[in-house]
Image (cartoon, rainbow, N blue to C red):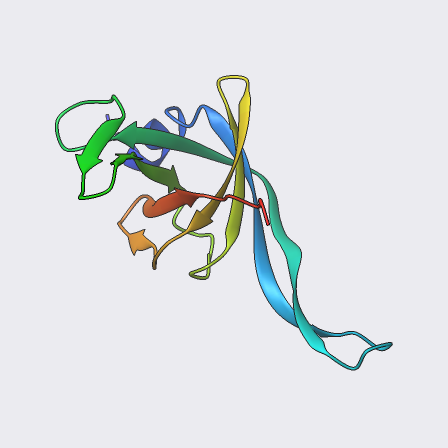
Length: 124
């Protein structure tokens, strides 16, 4: 019996995501070019994994001023989807929706891709 690794991985995807890319857009009124997010993919099966070096709990880093809470977030999804660095990714998994920005280029494997994410803080 031949097992398709891609099908096995797809069963692990417990979330869905929408992926937005930023494009330059000219504001006709002000003639200023601004970046605008455009939806590239919708309802893509995925899985988000949260971790740090030693466990799945938030880590605290010490510096001279205060403690900083850090958490590493990685998304796993099909390798046939092209995602540009800097894309906005909104994930719904386990009943929770979170907005992320990707912090680097995707790592492409034979049956999937992985992207390190940062939580998107749109407080301005």
